Image 1 (cartoon, rainbow, N blue to C red):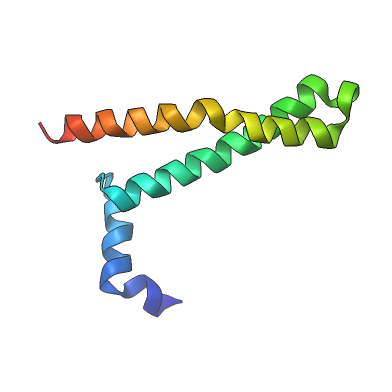
Image 2 (image 1 turned 30 degrees about the horizontal axis):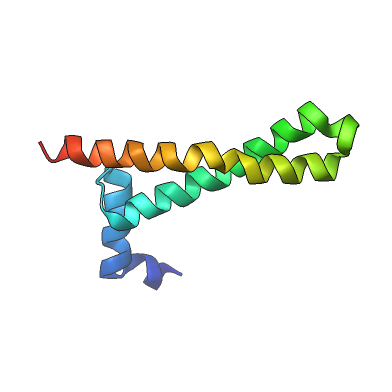
Length: 88
């Protein structure tokens, strides 16, 4: 495991991610992270809102599927704006 973290490409990637530099790999990782967190939040919100009415499993599944619909475009636009701002 330590050999993987100390290779040049992985080490550079972790350094870029920790430093806040935006490139295509770090933007993809932030997009995936935001999508996963929004799915978790959507599932929790679905359970709280409609758990008793339509069942906890169905409400969690619907919440997890519909939550990224608003998050993914917002993250892509936000990362594009940050990328433009860092170039100036």
